[in-house]
Image 1: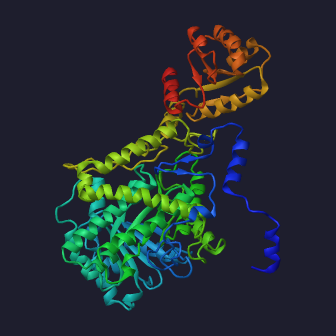
Image 2: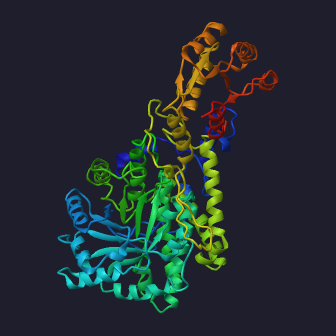
Image 3: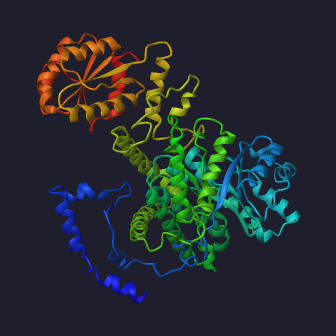
Length: 620
């Protein structure tokens, strides 16, 4: 530090944590510190409003370097260059090859070829698919829903017979019989041990990973970050155990596994999740006694979650995926797929795919997030999050191990029950708008209306359970589905009927009536109702007359708590078939209910159930 800098800092006396806390409590003016400033996470721990250097005291692994065991700071010694992956659905091998070559010229460095049925793949048409693609310059990932296909063997044969240097080829298949079990409910007793031959043959291409652990299945079923990571690690450990017991070396088994993780919009948590994953996976692999510590590197492909994506106001999905891509990049993902904004409800377009590619290209070429290894290192907050997540993940991981491992815990129903309980809590918070989905349960686009023709399954969980499934399966869904179904019902009703109208009858105190009218407009627009706000009425008679003239189905009285006792009964007396709703939870609520005024909306309302109720009252 320069001498002038030392003098500058000497002019400022240090401020202790006690002094900061005293100042914060003074500013809170009697509010409860824990309720006002401490964030209670889904992950089972609390997050403080600020962190200081003293919070790093005693934390392990702070002295490790990038590229060094336990890899918490990343797998690379220098830089943070991740691969930009785009997925291509293969229905025609020549067309898929042409598209792959096209996108490789537009910034993509990793291709994901997705097959609906890989039984039809042969060495010949695989050669057509990969024609003119330099396998030493671009990663290739072959993804098939069947775990009995021979894609890995075909790929190894193709590479070995080609002109490439096998050591420079980076590729993967996504064979995951345990993940298939999670979604379909069936698994053969020898499903994992049968992979031994594949793993042994894949050694001919050193950077070819043949086994996938799909943590994203948990994330897209409503799990917490801790659950996603703990269960993914437990699944990975299951593969290690069964493969090594079948005679595969731990080094070969570990190097065969690639983790496919989701990434959500919990920005800092997702960064810490990837750092935690590398830390714990390295410890798990280390326990098996590998010959090389490099075998303990956790290779992660991150894909933006479907769980939090929406059909209404879909362009907001671009904002969601942008922060998610940043989290994956800063967390040290090996590769990242940004799902196009419309991927959850229609076939992606050239435009949406271009935007998705460019979101990552901007992070590399303009934000330069790929230039610095472990850019989050030393952050008091992220380092603390990493440790907190690690503690919770390890605790849950050990619970699974105590039950006999992943498969045994899934057969018992433990994993499903944990995720279902978490998903129910998350759904409840969304229904109460304690968790906001922009454009769906909060601040909807008032003028947006979906056209007929949407597949109703878009609003339902995805059930891939096979006939004869032995266990309850996970059923991925989107947290916005219930609200989208609610609004779509209104949209379809209004094809042949008048769209319901909620009219804001604003009176009295200016501040209260404006705030409550804005709240109420958002409230009813969530269900696709038309809304009319107003500046204010001098009398009840004027307000009711204006509501009738507008053709209101619902009249929302917006005023102050003190004025409701007098105004609400007068409004109720003058209404006929219109539904009267009071905006707020006034102290006189019980008194008003005795007079037949029973509808109240406020910040603690379960908006989903309330709006379903209003649809029923209106015959929708």
